[in-house]
Picture 1 (cartoon, rainbow, N blue to C red):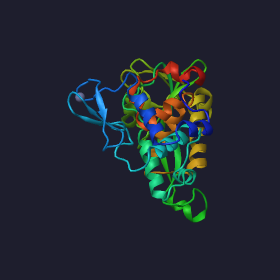
Picture 2: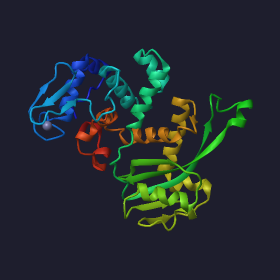
Picture 3: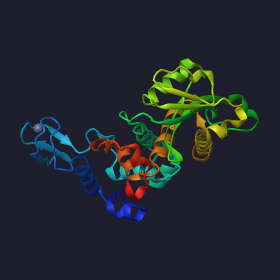
Picture 4: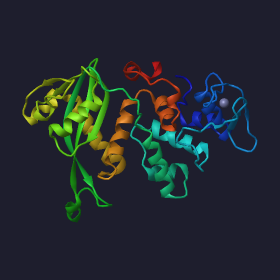
Length: 308
Ligand SMILES: [Zn+2]
């Protein structure tokens, strides 16, 4: 897709002010021209008194261009939202609230953190389609930290804990497709079966290390490869690579993850991974305007970015 800026310079010249951001939102939401969400007609007038708002000529409903997006009712300028979404979407490793605060010159850490939190909240699409075909599944544990204690080092150790999680990686064409990660309370069938049910399409094949907690999940073909734990990375290479990347990312970007927000960080990692070749889609999703377009398919995700 050519309508996504490829560099910071391009981004800056493309979105220099509020009006430019509004034009982009209008084009993304109403590619065929304004459509009233209440009555479906297309004739409307821009309001003088309310910024970026149209009033329907037929039913009188007023519609803001940011209605239904995460930017609605925000006091922050659209340019700031666009910058934040661009940085989050294009940084291959993501960006912490502190980095965002510095990059955007935000006055307080709190507003940067809230901005990040809102953008991160739009990282799980409610209509995302489950993983299909052959799917590697495995569990791992991740060391978490509490408060501001460092991950390692003497006194901090008593605050450390481990969080259990389960991951799934779609495997096709010799490489990984989409992934899912979820925190679980234990590795019992009671915890693992709901994960399989929520994330695997009917008829998918779950390739596992043979752990008993996976067998018997309804609707899923189980393909166990019973091996010693040491050899699991041979049987399940992609889940192991994803787990390793996740742990490195958690340390590098966030200096370790906290238990309280773990699932949102897992969601961010998944979002980033699944859109690694379609950054423009990530940008739109983050702003909450992706819904104007049909969700992208697995094929689109695994295609090179230039074709997507
Ligand atoms: Zn109307």
